Image (cartoon, rainbow, N blue to C red; front, side, top):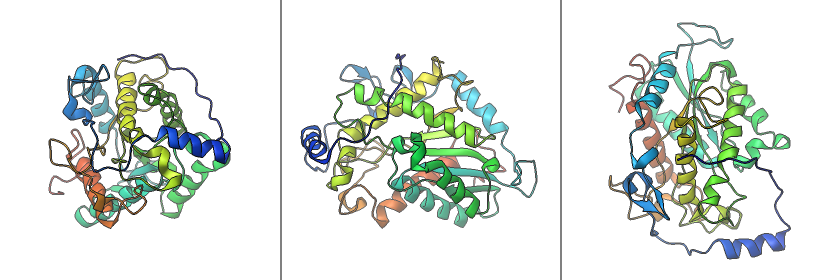
Length: 325
């Protein structure tokens, strides 16, 4: 599905009183174990407010052949690089996680699982995500998001030149008061700009996996209220439509404009009810404020990311041993 994307102006938060009033009107749902929403891959060709589901165009859960071929081409170019970005058999392929604090927790857990299962692999999974910084902070130069991320990568002993894979999971704190589909559509330009920044900072970047985010029905933390339902569910639609923009090669979203992108592991599920594959997000998976995962939730999402990487079609065998499960 093609959409006309207009430029997005990043506006500051309103004054505290107005902010709270908007939150009260925008966050219409109480905390709940589930909502009347269907995960996109379960929705398929059925519709939500007139829009077909599925992860890809026309309600399908499989990418079109042209997109698959583009991804396979990028994966075939992965190679161990040293910190100068030169081919080196003793170098690494770095997969960096970006987003905010929840993405940092998930990436860190996945990295631990990878180290335990694939310690001899050239692939290194690291977190460059920054706590308390949503997609708007990633676009806001004074926030220092990218400086902090690059410093973090360096402190871990790697360089920007070694980052060839990225996993991105974030949210938008500024669109909670918009209705569907505008709330999802207004995020597309922001994602596009973030993808361009990733391309600028990481010259050897081959593929970006973009995930939605966890079920937000348990959120009570006042600072995180803009991320609760239905905003969390709408993020799934933003990611779906973002990827469709590239598949359809819409202006400024084509393969020559931004890095090759695809779905990462789908994180949104209908709370305790879950999805058709049995994946749930229970109260015990979210902390007291509902935004961050508990220890159990962190490892649940970390395992989901880890298994996604291991089983992703086209991943080179030398990089991702089939024995790693």
